Amino acid sequence: MTTATQTFDDVDKALLTELQKQFPIDHRPFQRLGELLGVTEQECLERIARLKATMVIRQLCAIFDTRALGYQSSLVAMRVDPARVDEAAEVVNQHPGVSHNYKRNDSFNIWFTIAMPPQDSLEQIVRILHTLGKAEETIMLPTLRLYKIGVKLDLTGQEAALENPEEIYDEARRMAPKPPLTEQDVRLIRILQEDLPLLELPYAVWAEQAGMTEEELFAWAKKMEHLGYMRRFAAILYHRNAGFKANAMVVWQAPPEEVDRAGEQMARFREVSHCYRRPVYPSWPYALFTMIHAETYPACMDVVRRIEERAGQFPHKNLFSTKEYKKTRLKYFTPELDRWWSEVGSKVRL
Image (tube, rainbow, N blue to C red; front, side, top):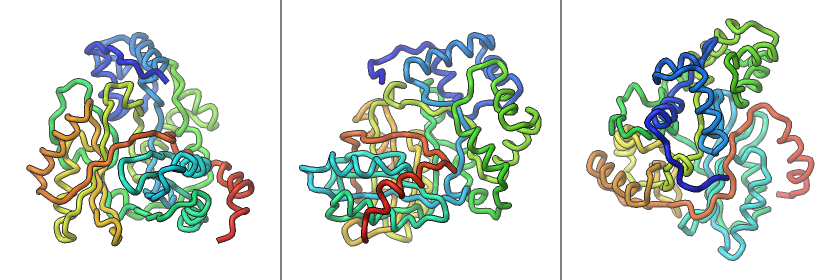
C-alpha cells in the first residue's frame, strides 16, 4: 500500500470530499460528477483512476446497512496476553465476518467488528474465537443505539464544523418495518457491493449482469435507499493515504440518563464518523463510543476538547490503533462462512 504523503490539488480535494457523500446513480455518473466539479467527464474518470491507482480511493460501491439486511453485528474487545496478541489476532482474522481488527493501547488489546447472517449465532462464533484466540476476557459490544455512521473526510477544509441533524444517519428509517428481501434483491446486492467499473456507462455493465435495464437498476437502487437497506452509493477511502493519518476511538463513561443527549451532540462533529451507545460491563463502564479521524494526533485531541465543551465532560479513554490487523469491506450473502465452519468452526468444542 502507498503510504507516502500525496499532494492533491483543489479539484482532487473537492472530488474526494464529494465522492464520500454521494456518488450519482445515473446513466453517465462521471459526467454528472464532473459538471458539479467543473471538469469534463474524461478528466473526472482519469482523476478517479489515478486516485485508485495511488491507493487513495479504495472502492466505489453501494454501502448497505448491515442490520437492515438481517445481519447481526458487534464490536468485540479481547484481552489477550501481550506476548501472543499477534497470534490471537491472526486467528480472529480468519473468520470472514471479521471486517476490521486492530491492536489498541488498552488492556483490552484486540478490537474487531464481526457480522453474521441471521441464521447463525453471533454469540457462539465469538465464544469460538475467544477459545481459539486463548483470550483472557472477551466482551461483546453490540450497538444499542446508533447516532451516526459514515466516514466523510473533509479534504477541502470548507465543510461546516458541525453537521446539521438532518445530515446525520436516520435511525428511524433504519428501524422502520421493511418488506423481506427477495432472491432478486440478494442477487443485486451481490453485484452493487462490488467496485464500480471506471467506464462512461458503468451501470450498463451491472444492468447486463443482472439481466435488466439501467432504468430498472436505478429504480431498484432508489427503492433500497428509501427503505433503508442501502445507506448510500459512495467512495470509501484509504484514510491515511488521503492525509488523515490519526484516528482515535474515544469511549465515554456517561451516566445512563446523559448518554443519549451527549451521543446526539457528539455525532454532529464533522470529524466523528461513528457514534454509538453500547452495553457496559464491570470491567468496561464506557457506554458511548466515538470514532474520530484527523490529520494528526494533536488534531484528534483538539476534537476531544471541543466535544467536551459541547456535550459535557465525562471520564473517557482515548484508544489509538497501534497496529492494523485487518480492514476490508464486509461482503454480504457470500459462501465464505460455510467454508470457515467446515475448516475451523466445526473443530472447536464449547
